[in-house]
Length: 222
Image 1: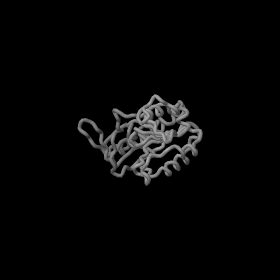
Image 2 (image 1 turned 180 degrees about the vertical axis):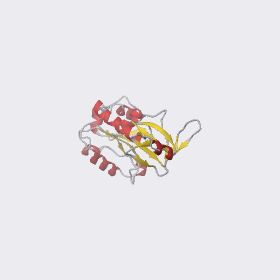
Image 3 (image 1 turned 60 degrees about the vertical axis):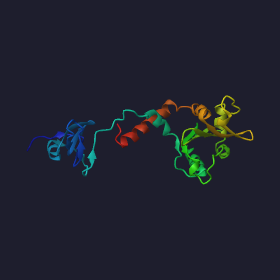
Image 4 (image 1 turned 90 degrees about the horizontal axis):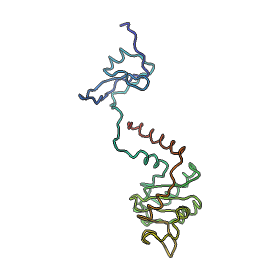
């Protein structure tokens, strides 16, 4: 027919679209304008009624409305993006290597990692802060064990949090070797140091929140 087609910014066709209405209708195509769905239906109907310079063939893939998580720790997730993920790394030296390479990305402030587990290392013993202190003499470093009950803190972190010579904790929570604080802290002592890790400033936080948003959008979490 010679009727004028409505302009759309994007037409997606050859898809299996779940509308998630009360009948769980499926459709083959939709047209989008200004970020909103204009119309949804068979590929024939949509291509017959709408014109677009961008037509995407979905090759029969499934399309769903964006998922909404009713309970997500979005702020926490954002903050974690600036931390090093140490889970699954099978030696302490490999962890030190990762931290050393990554310090160039953020040249100042605290270095925070989480997820180390000495049980998957060749030497299945808790590390101490000796190597951390030589790599990072002035930058505080706090590395959380996979269970969240134990952290390894370097000298700079212990000094900045007032942990050296601290006597208000159970001595069992601050590991010492011949009077030397090894940097291994557990339970309340670990929480005390963790709670003193500074939050990112507003500018840095906005960048982290936007990155977290991108990651969520990429997997359909809107």
